[in-house]
Image (cartoon, rainbow, N blue to C red; front, side, top):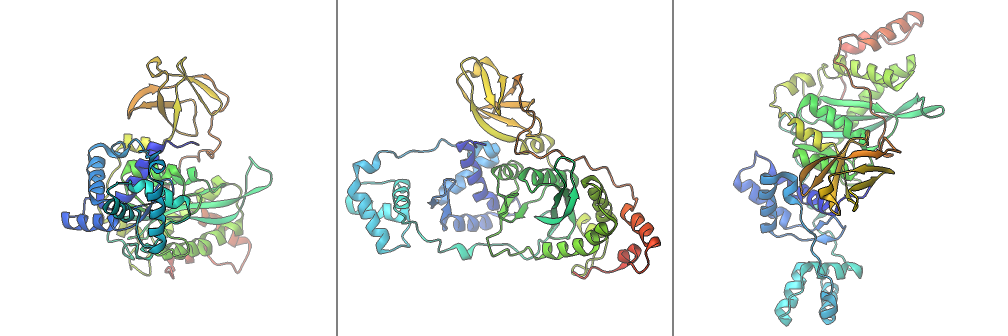
Length: 444
């Protein structure tokens, strides 16, 4: 996929200001957050370190509130050619950085301006130092805020993870496929918001679990994930930005706040997978049916040893924001830029489409669900210009998209896993009764 540079820049800006957008903050608290953001060095969308002014951050906050993600889009600046005019200034900038590595590009540019009366842009200085391998060390990295150990209310912070499970028969591949459980937990209540076993650890699988979780439980303020491939994609960042969710990635080798998931994973392994593997798993559909029933009948209703309450009971006492249906739909579209040909056609994923003739020669944005390439929306300058008309369809599904999971039905109250285990226990003695598991307190 080829992300739109303008959208990449907008997403980068959103994730910088997401914490300051919380409606719970007063003016003083928001000012403190803005000053902290402006006082740190940030890796830009191109990977280069950047320093930001408070005015820029305040302006982005206002534009996002007025226009959403579209307000953060911008045309990338270019300072090409400036280094040819002032080569001696660049060499002096190199000496200044070598003399004191803690000097920022903005500070070096200011020093050059005061000394020579010639202004080099901060971006030019930063790029030239980057090319010479003279990047500033991330001195403030360890001061990054990780928030409270426990969220103060439901839906304030969700934590997502992937649990690797057993091999399960998979008809679309020879033999079996290792099952991956995408799960989301509410940090305050310990509720398993949603979870689904999938045959692949793909980003789209995680997106679908997040979408279904939002439909069932409301919008979270934060989503806390690790740096695995399932959560590192551009598309997840776009989904969160459109919905106003602050996406937080844990630092490598410092996964603060993820201990709750480790304990939950242990419970799932010891109390669900152990029994599920004992009776056998015939398919992913059966595994998900059993897991869904077990989650709703046991996991979310048991008394948690740390909170002293059932997760569902604690979760339901909070206030929950509902997502706007149209915004939710748009949030989980994938997006790619394309140029419309002179004949008004667009080539995408080996397919050919017809679009509005008024867009001939224009750079447009295609928004689509990767599971269905026959229906693609066309956007130009943040306005919808209808849908593409398929002319030649060679591929119906994007190669990076896994098959859509079968939608989950509402719980029926039937404890399927318990019934299977009861039949199994009637044939073999000495096994632990499933009903005994239901009344035991969770050791976590």
